[in-house]
Length: 271
Image (cartoon, rainbow, N blue to C red; front, side, top):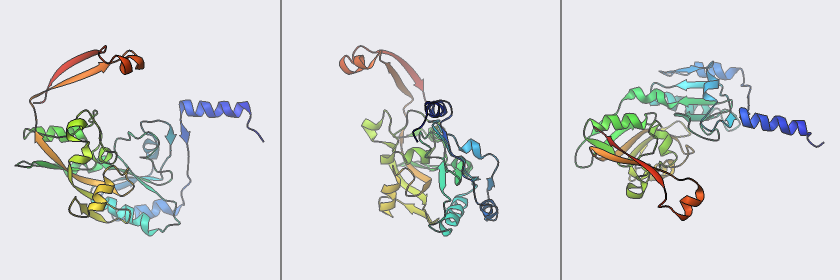
């Protein structure tokens, strides 16, 4: 039977105003099994709809629980629990930073969403010297990384153009910005990672140690593990930078006459 015009209209309205919403009814023993896990943080089961939206606002997949981890061990314990349930289990896990994904990648339909920003309290450690770097949690915001490194006159080499994103989130996607032409994307300026694998193991990796996992996780969209810590290369921070916003009237102007752009310049003091 062919869909009616009314059915098509209902689908269009759903896509336009609310996206696609899918509700999975969890097995009754899943919440109780999660509550029994020995974690320092906690699971919440009543605020799941807040974790069922992202920046794209196209899909809504409510999880059965949200983990607010107090430590990396909490994440490893949870992932290991899901892994031991076996391949026939439908329970999934998704790491969520600020939820700036477009197609529901930071959601887990009927699964567990890990609120990575709960790890911010673990602190950051700046190591100045000939080759300076900072160790930052995967749930830390880049704007907080900048504020911490500026105390030492240092700054990360490569950025995203919007800094209210998590370290683990952008490193899982590459991290491209206006500095990419000079320093490469953010994933090219990482010296070491700490990752929770799909088995629930906590592994430290670098170009010299567990290099396959290191290169797979950087830009790997979270498919090879959850980035819980990153060692980010730093450089001396300038005292002033120039920010230029170029506004083109239309695509034809951008393509044919790039010199005809309206732009504004602002000098921004860093410290």
